[in-house]
Length: 266
Image (cartoon, rainbow, N blue to C red; front, side, top):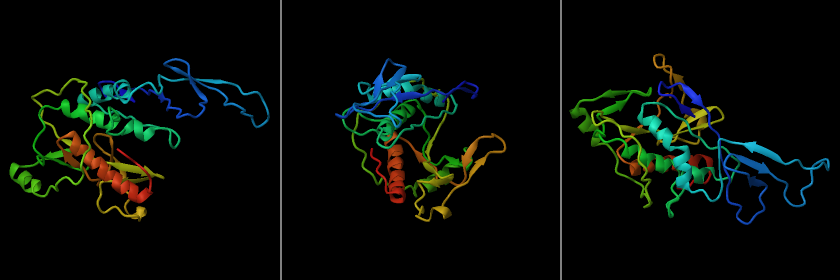
């Protein structure tokens, strides 16, 4: 979803990425950079023995196995980062069947230049923020806002910040540049990580998250002044670098795996 500078919605863009065939026969054929065609596999028989009708689907852009993670990021995410630096919201999500490549596209791995959209986005965000304040000066108010603390209170809180608990694999960072925030601005970056499942919302950075999901669900509220949605009482962690942000992502995945017994990798 992209947005105008005044924050109003402009368009919903739908992009298709075709996963590698891995030796299997594919029923998806790339026509050009906007169209894909569904074709019948060999010996395919319809339910009523009717002739298979090839179907053509149009997207805003189509990628195939020759397009790299870098290509996907620069086409699909870079403008969202620029939008964020300008003070606007953006939304990007992946959708597809199990095993279609959603996780690889979003997170990737540390091999070669396979970092996904998330780490590349973080690379560009931190490169675009020249004046990040020391931690604990800004304090989240739990409603997508913040308060400013005295230096004395900030120093006391810094002493309670835990040391990193994850080792981040070395990887090639995203080097593309976007417009930077003015040096006259001060900023801080906070990370939150939630799961929405069956209309319930869970804070994946909450160390007290348990298997008793019903008792740990968070409420989604609408701010009476800004009219923006927020998740009530979730944990927001201040980070000063891309690696710190990825550490929180890995921490959230640990709790997610514990609850869902699924596989997520980075």
